[in-house]
Length: 487
Ligand SMILES: [Fe+2]
Image 1: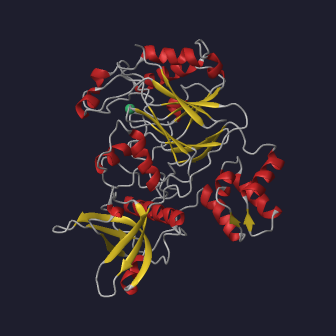
Image 2: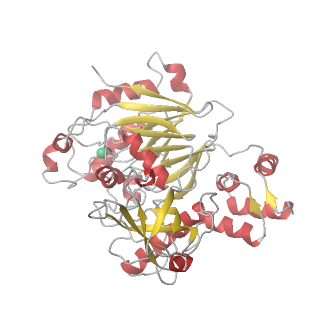
Image 3: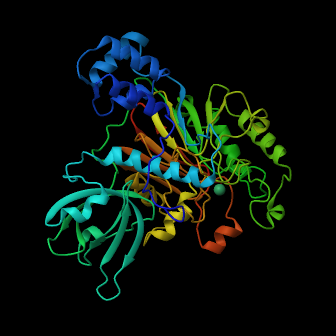
């Protein structure tokens, strides 16, 4: 929660987004959704209309995945509508005027409530109580769900002390220095559950188990029933003198079927770029020395020219990064119209982060400035091993929880940096390194870069791995790394 005060106090009501609106409809109709059904409904083009139709049609108290799939197939002729569908942009502006303090309070309350919803009901979190009631439960084992306010070690014994708050109060919990539950990093403002034992005559409650929202049950990834492939790219940095033009031409030739791999290229239906589309202007001191194109609109025009050389049938999804011409605070809105209109018509623009489906497969795309917060906070974390950091993000179900670090956080009413619902594919960039891994059914991709090693990276001793692309076969849910470097 950083400097913006605790969660204690009256919870302002977060404005309902589509997910919450659908949830409310089913709660009001006294229907329970089987796990996965909510995501299934949200992937549809008209989730509210579909929900009302389901409520009218089925009177049973539980709606199963099978029932809903069959209903969608009968109504729409397919389990999931094809092509690109935006599910939610991380960026959701206020609909009324609020002070930054109110905005942050609403943001953190929204984060707490949504992650609480994900954590409650876990078998390990029995006897869940509000943190205000901790002193009244001496001599008992109970559970709490809270946001991390403070992490410190006791001076003499090196036990870990975790201060957590929820909407009712704050309390400190001890994890003994030999307790394996204290291993790993605890980040400020992440939300987690604790199973706790509070001795009858002690002031401190002892942690028996730490429960993160994570992926409680490994996911069965969605697949298409027809051949469909997506190519993931990131960090193009168009306009920089160090843009890898030759390597990019190799990529363009591949996509146009002018290489030996034309059979693979033909099956590609979508391209996703995870931010830093252009190099931008004034992003770091002395950047003008590194720029081949000194005008921001010209940089986007050049991006448009490069993308227009891709086959027109491709659906190209772009999200911004910290080098792009949108507000740097996260979540970032999509590129504004002034730049959008110089891009080809097959381009779709999302915010950063962005949640969308491609042929019914759910993608969470995030540029990745959260790496700059998380890498220094986790012992052993490295930019060269990006999927390790992405696993931690997935475990927290949050892309960058800590307030007041390197990344400005926009005081918006809804926490757009939550990972919710769980995607089939989680893609990031920013590090200019490359990585791919399957974790509990979620494919993690860090999608390289199209710029040579920068001075900034040399300074930070980060070795980039540029000119790599990741090809995901949506029918098989398998991925391949493609190397376009020119040796
Ligand atoms: Fe970048």
